[in-house]
Length: 457
Image 1 (cartoon, rainbow, N blue to C red):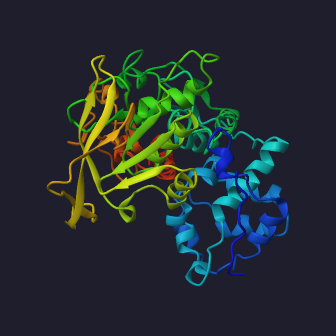
Image 2: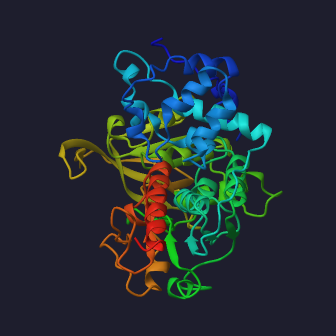
Image 3: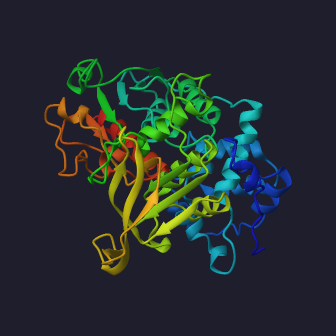
């Protein structure tokens, strides 16, 4: 009972040249056997680690007896996006981290079981719960990412009329433009979005709030507004050469690959430079996604450059391992200082310096310091900067009375209430770039607060 079921995966030698999903999912038999490992604790700690409050032992119990219909109903009573959570949620640092079995062996594979039952349901077509009596209240949700979708679903469940305003031509936010097909297939995102719509939510695409309407104008038509605009503004290194051709922000690179399907050019209109020697700067999940996409586009060599060591890398251990299996190289304790180009302004190499770790910095990680005399160059015809993002300032700049932090994030209370009456916010727009599940948790908390606000509490 201490050993977890191993999830089948594509062979690394095969998957490194395709965009098909890497993980293949549990079989029916594997799911049941894995669920039987659950101890059904009287005081389950795993629930405390779930930002969207899934009653984990209950759904796992249903899986253990083969009642997958009841399992998915249990999950969807609180979580409208289980197929997404089961794939990209960092369960190892949340619900699974608190599993009692993890003290002596492998914790229950909660995320993989959630993925299994959601995939099972999708093949049979999702059952739509009965719509509640309308409250007569209207809520505008700005952004259709994980925070916005969660808030919209929870508000629709209690009878409010909800309209989502999405700036892009496809819904899903970072789920659509940021996370690659091989980690999160887009047909799954579309299916989850459609489920939210079937709850009664109206979705308006190509609707840039701050341009077509301001938040103040929305408040003249809606009783409350939720801002789930995410953090899509790229952060750069601020070194010489970042304006050279062949240098991308990870945001642009992944948007071209995922949302605009440039890997299928010319069938899709948006091209992308397919480098032979690609360098990705950064150590998070976005850096891993960028590097693995570049490899699948046909690069001969992909190198991740990160100024700290592997223990300090913020990416999930699973993503780092997958990248290594696929042949991506890691240059750790290495920091870029300059990008060089040729006569036509195409990047040719990246100048770096080796680093060593000193005392921990404000984040609790060891502070990297340059090692004198260790300067060197790495050949590169494509460089992708994946060191973080910040919120887009458009909505805050066009909204009166909405206070911002010095980091450009929206200031909000724990329940999502902002400094502007009737306006709530959550997800990356408030915290800065974080995880999908933390954004979903913020959307759920804000939806509860909006419901109470609309009821006059």
